[in-house]
Length: 148
Image 1 (cartoon, rainbow, N blue to C red):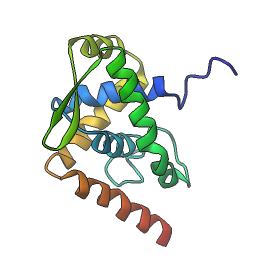
Image 2 (cartoon, one colour; image 1 turned 180 degrees about the vertical axis):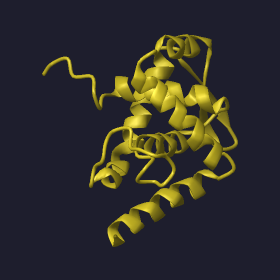
Image 3 (cartoon, one colour; image 1 turned 30 degrees about the vertical axis):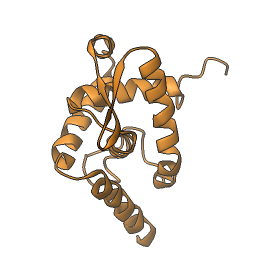
């Protein structure tokens, strides 16, 4: 299937734009990767009522490649002038700009709405955590899954 959209940098970019819009503040690649993973597998991470991408026994193994995919998506977003990058004391951080907000405003699918709802819940729950604490949370949930 030549015109595959799922699991591509483009699809990931759209999710990152939705997430950046919900966050409303700059974030680095690690934070975007962790929050995106939790938004997708919210039930397995014990945050949401369902997994947006369905139930998957190997979901936590996907996290090992998540950062690379998010980095590609962020590069695509910056090249297309949807995200703004700034070099801070914490490293490179990215935030949505007006052009990115316009794209988000045009995403009207049920998937986009479900993702945004989940992202708001996830953001409220993890807003006060550091990036390291957020990554540790995912690691802990993966360990619980192995032990189940």
